[in-house]
Every structure is written in structure tokens, then in C-alpha cells.
Amino acid sequence: MAYLLKTSPVAELLPLIAAAVRGAPATIDARVGSLARLPARMPPPASLGRLSAREFDVLAEMAKGMDNARIAQRLFISNDTVKTHVKAILRKLGARDRAHAVAMVLGESSEAFVTT
Image (cartoon, rainbow, N blue to C red):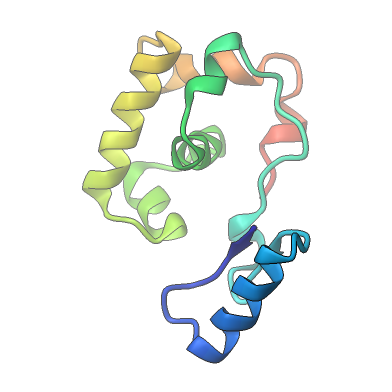
């Protein structure tokens, strides 16, 4: 329902938790900006539904051409965590490598998916 930075003050966190309980629409911390935006649509293969939300986030960054270090920085996770997610993505999609995984999900709509 919401995405906040780890450094967000409790004063911001509590109202968002209350709003989430009431079913309010998703909220993204304004300080994150475009880093949290995901494409509106993505033509997934059937196996894409097996990805976790975080694996999807990593895959979206891979599709933008980001390397592991940059993905880690943009998603506020460690480089080792990115590597773990990439391995899981490749396994779940049955992809040979990162490029194959990206090609599998982008298909014809790469412009709609890869935004900066």
C-alpha cells in the first residue's frame, strides 16, 4: 500500500499505516520519486507471476540496463541481495542470462517498460 524510506520519521509512518488499514490508495514517499515507479503495463510470460514483488522490482531495473551495484543503490538493498534476486529471476523464468530474462518479458513493448 505504501513505500517509505527506511529513514522516514515515525510521524510519517503512523498515518500511512492507518491509511493502509482503511484501504487508501498506494502512497510513495516523495523523496524516492521516479526510483519507485514501475511501468503501467508489462507483457508477462506465464512464469512472471511466480516472481516476488522485489524480484519484479529487480527485473524492472535490469530492463533499464542497470548493473547489480546500481540496482542495489536504487532499491536500497545490498549487492548480494540483488545477486540472489537475479538468480531467482533467472531460475523462475527459465532464462539463460539477464539479457534473456529481459527479452522474455519486454517483447514488443520495451518503450512502455523501460522508462527513466
